[in-house]
Image 1 (cartoon, rainbow, N blue to C red):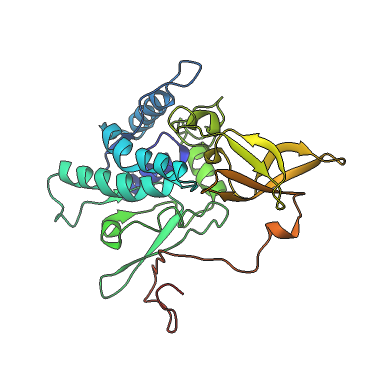
Image 2: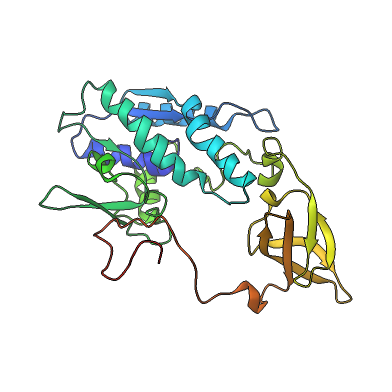
Length: 299
């Protein structure tokens, strides 16, 4: 349970179905934001309140060390190498459906107990085949679908997991929470990254951990039109926060020149160079089947 409405309703639904339920909160970060508030403290309080409402026990597991080693440091390394990672994907694979899953199942004695399941509030669904395979599919509410964020979780780690709200729409989940009078029914959704805080920009947060290497901001013809504070604070396609030229164009990031530590930009958000008819993808994940015939590694 995260302290949000989705996991609260998930706990409510599985209890309603007759399961013996225990709420478990996962703590991954331990610093405070600028206002001196640690948001995880409030989330933990909300979990305790909901568990009391549902008359189920609850506990907290600490994965601060594991998160730092297996998610956060890797994220920082990616930014230092000019890559924009997705820590939520890594967290699901390494922590929530890795360390957390093992500890939860281990805490209730053994992983062989077929009656022991982990329920989360993710908007995804699973299809279980006659052969025993588990296939990850999109949640019913496409606007909230989280299948991408769970796409790198090993199939074997989904065998003992259920997603009670995966077949529901968000408005249905909120309605259930209100009808059940759950504490989190009207809690605002958390859209940011947990460790950044509410008042900081992500780039400002990263500056505490990534060594800044200022460099040139250049146009395609090599003209230097400004300076960047570090390539890690820019993502391809985003506004470059610089005005240059007689028309005071707004410039957008075309690419990062890692070798020369330069940011290449073009004017205008609709510049044709910002669009492409093809892309290069790697590390494919085929959650439904084997790769289609004709697709070879590296092509």
